Image (cartoon, rainbow, N blue to C red; front, top):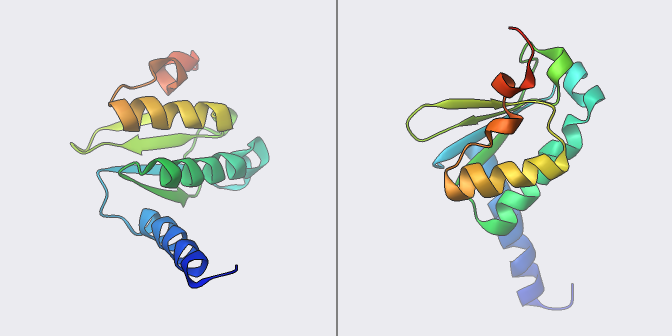
Length: 123
């Protein structure tokens, strides 16, 4: 940090990250962060979602939750849309997380090949 403008830039970036966790956005993304999710790689997925959403100014709140109940399909990411619809993405990695943001949040198109319905697991 060399100047006041550097400090202001750092502050603005931090405020963006905090606002994504407080709500009041068009979309809400929830990442399963119970022991099963963390063991399957949910932490890097959560980090990717937060960083990419902030970088691209997506209208989304990113939060975490406990067990979603489908441990064999972790990491699980649920996207809640503006009309209250919910899409459950399974076996998500950082690459898929970026694609979900770009397509679902950015363009409003569900990445159906990553959803629980496409997983082939009977629920």
